[in-house]
Image (tube, rainbow, N blue to C red):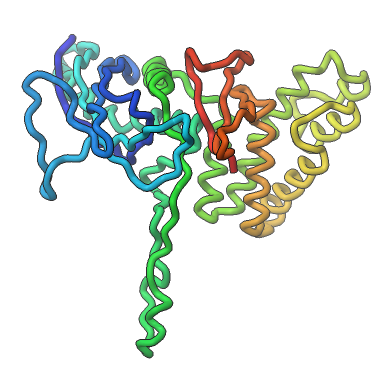
Length: 344
């Protein structure tokens, strides 16, 4: 069944992208449901509604609805102008027809059922490929209250209260990246597990969940290091190749790499440090410090950036603010699914 179901979807968290991604219609979907995403027009610093016939004016209680808007952020020169996407229009919804006992499950109902799951998959890909933090359930805000709930009896001390404001460094999606993400979600393709774990480790570290950050980072490292060593099994000494089996763990993989004198993106002693940090956190209940968590996440980023399925080369902007992704086979992704990732 195909219908031109026109609906406006407000993204639970806005996604930064280059302005070249706006003013275009993109095909996407979720499961058996298919639909188009119609982007607002690029009119920085605030986007205009999509250019659709008979598009009704949209107003909110606070005034005109915001479709896209610029905020204070550091954007690499090559990715400007950029804007934060807040709303899109959904059209051309096509879904399967059901028998009599589910005849009510029309494309409109299917869209309502799946739209938030669709966004969760979209934001996962965007987080993996750009480093943007898009968790709608536990947000990290650029403005944070200092001393919330604290009242000084002596008025002169009230100056200690206030706001702590930071300006984020953002890597927005480019048009081809946005199109690729929407296609991946439509086709049910998920990011590599290690990249999802990397996303989770970075998110945990930002939220001061240091033990979780270290465990996720070490697990991502173990997946990639194990895959890398197994891929080189034919080049390893016989004694080291014989140590590889289904139960081989991170510590053994590190030892194999050291004894085989493999060239890795991160020194072996740093990998061993992260392994011990993970063991202490997971098995002995040790509480890692914020600095240790940050260092652990950086070790993971550096290792995945060279040895992971989605690889990064350090071709930085003059401000040093980005990586360039290449695909899982090693070819440049600029024509298919390129992306950027923030340097920590």
